[in-house]
View 1 (tube, chains in turn purple, orange):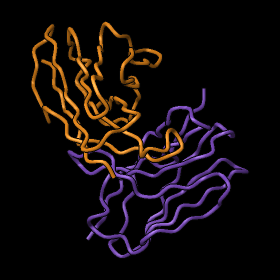
View 2 (view 1 turned 90 degrees about the vertical axis):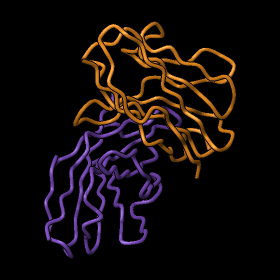
View 3 (view 1 turned 180 degrees about the vertical axis):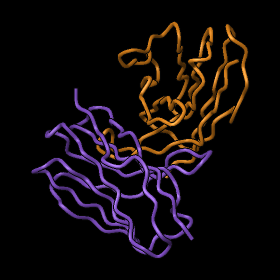
View 4 (view 1 turned 180 degrees about the horizontal axis):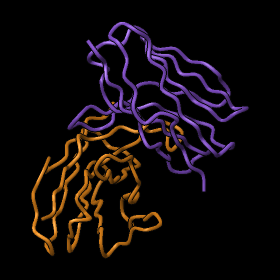
Length: 111
Length: 116
């Protein structure tokens, strides 16, 4: 079946730098993607989503890029702050099938 | 966005016992889901809780082990039966945003179970 994975399981960045978290997916039919943030002891929190008819979407300090050619999704966080430290999951959905979550990347923000 | 409350938030359980987790949503929702998150891992869907009918289980999960109730559009329970240490996980209740599978999922804070 389809799977969603990440290139980097852990990422450490300096406070104020930009962060890039990557996600690879194998199902080319997936049409909807979400990035979630999960802080310690909490449930996943929606950050941003993107549909397959777009290749870029911006939010507040976050940008999601979708490259359907190579089946790659990335989350960019500008001016990373200590509060951004968390585990980030990508999730994909294929036309009404259940969401499939990636393995997660832990982002650590260094002072 | 929906506000989802789960109880208990955490518990320590003895091997062989069963525990029921409750999920309450502040608004009526069509789709409710139960996920498992094993330590240091990602989220795996256990089942979709259907109102008025039996839950739909994913491969690897069975009703005898994880019975689910959905008596109305705002409430669901998940029971973890005959627990073993391998069941130590975070169990998460989730609802959709009313747009079915094409919309975002909202999650509760999770119920962290430790089985001794």
